Image 1 (cartoon, helix red, strand yellow):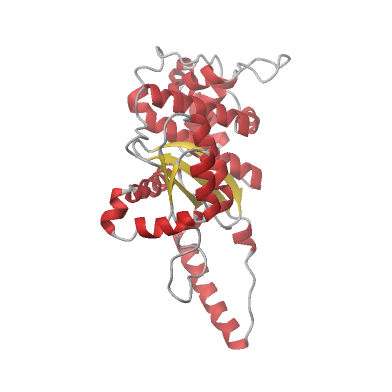
Image 2 (spheres, helix red, strand yellow):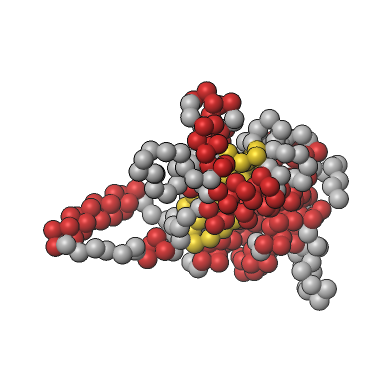
Length: 324
């Protein structure tokens, strides 16, 4: 909570408007939201928790506890693209000063994952799986073909770029629907390049991001080294190499286990570790009822994860380290 307050104090305005009531500052509200997400509470639960912990409120200079409506309205303002980008800029700046990124030796790993749109029990998941299996068997007998369900079209999706040397998420993308991964490749990698403009570091991703255009953009326009397996699309009938200069090079470069380790593609699994960390520590289900509120929930989970990673190193220095 102290770290969230200190970081937001350095990169966010004190109030959202010059005519606001000024009962609570934006950094204070962001600290409350970080505690809410870390302890997996609702807005009402976070209000009750803060009322029971006056020492926590004094740590961030709160004279009284914000109610749940204030926290909900603060989330709508703080978890927009502009504020989230400012906080991620500061996270990367802080990590660079502490020499935690190590992008010279450890690549940036990009991947996406889906979250549950609501809380469900394991028993309910098993029953739904059995029902879908029976329905597919009946449809096969009658020759019917079902289209994609509403559940898949409304599935919350999060794409992240992770510094594999320290498990920090330095860029993100939020969306809806279980679609392809490659459309948000430029968004994620472009944000990472903007935050870390120096050096020629590597970007590793799975076959969902495979395309010759992605390699050309990353290598020629961004000045990066992209490593993506050329397995997207149909293979050639004659068994020849894939099309495109960089995809053919990837085919040779990732041909053996030793070569994959040499080009650091095996470090890609660290982004899977980060996805698992976020879902285990902060829950894989979202409380939002609309697409925009679920996107805000995923952004808050990402920022809270970064604060939890930085906390062991930055908690003692958060009061003294001043970042511009």
